[in-house]
Length: 127
Image: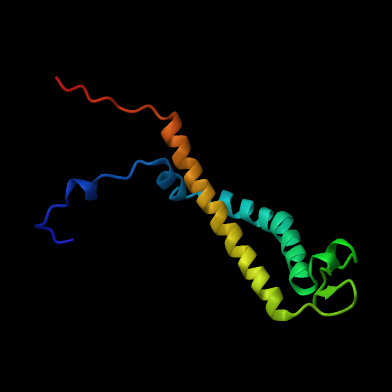
C-alpha cells in the first residue's frame, strides 16, 4: 500500500464474525484435520465401498448375493474379480470431496447459526 494513501475504515477493521475467527485460528487445522480423517476412515470409506458394489454389480448383488469389496490392495470383490480402477477412483475422489466440502460447509453454517442465535447484539442508543 502506498504510504500517502490511508486505508479505509473497512480495510483497517478486523472481521469479527465467529466463522472467520475459527477458520483463521492457528489451532483450527490441528483439530479439524484429524476430525476429517476419522470421518473419512470410519464413515466415508465403508459407504464408498457399498456405493462401489452398487455401481458395478447393482443393488441385488450387495443385498442378496452378498458381494462385498475386500479392502486389500489391489481391491477385489468377494467373488474374486478385480474392482475396476476408474470406478474405484471416481468413488474415492467423489466421496472425499463430498465429505470434506460438506463437513466444512456444515461447520461454517453451524458457526454462523450459533453466532446469530447466541450472541448479544450491541445496542446503539440514538438520542
